[in-house]
Length: 395
Image (cartoon, rainbow, N blue to C red; front, side, top):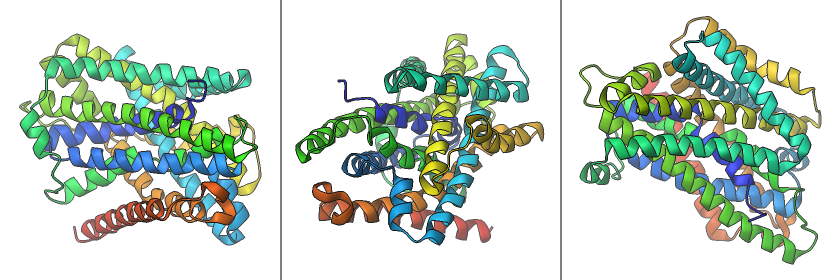
């Protein structure tokens, strides 16, 4: 038990407000059709986060640090530049989610709610001054708030087993489902926590001998499977609740605000309240984890550490501009997840390459089968993104 925790911090990114937008949109518009995307994405997430944690245990380095050590400088600078763009898209989703939740709960303006979300993220990061465990406990507590909210709504709304079974068959129905699938993938497999997870394990535990490293690796398998299973259950509950309670409404649900109103109409005020509280917990927790990941990215790729306030302002400003410009928040959330999906290969491919090298990983080097499966995962993600670009350009 004392060795568990890092994966639960990473798992928050897998149920961030972007997941609310993509899963609710998918469930309310297409019912159970895209359940298979969630299942596949969650299995991918388990493998990817396990590899990231393993790299930290084997080398004592985060993925950005490993990239800086083993790749040419131009490649490292390019990876850093795209990672910063991904951080901006991540912050957009998290701040928008917190702002929407505060608007639903207290009728606060979105801009005010965005600023409050950013301030809370600073408070969560302040817990790190007391050690890793207080931060992990706070993040896990917020994760449980999201879980309770959606399990309650799932119990109220029920589930159609037959429709859920058909949703496990991989298929699309038009360009919009491909866009949503890519967004769901971007919302589930998050680039910034691929960079972060190794940093959470690299120096926290004794890892001086091969026996200690192998023991840590076993504990991290349990950590990753437990945390990612929990995140997968929450994502699945989001989509099922939307499919059961929102897909039958007279008007299609296009925004999180409409989803909140639809839940109140179909499942009652308590369901709507728990939905808003879950969104708020998700925005607060994911914003804190995202800021932490941004520090790891900059310090790892550039070997530079800037003040946390400045770091936060760099990625927060675009989110506040989007809010102030009056852009549809839910649509902005979905598009931000598509941007994140484009960033996944730039984190995943270096991770696969480095964890397959014995001179980097030592005794914890990937088995050939693990490398092959990880390479297939990377290829599937890249192929889905290329398909999306082609369909979008074709109109």
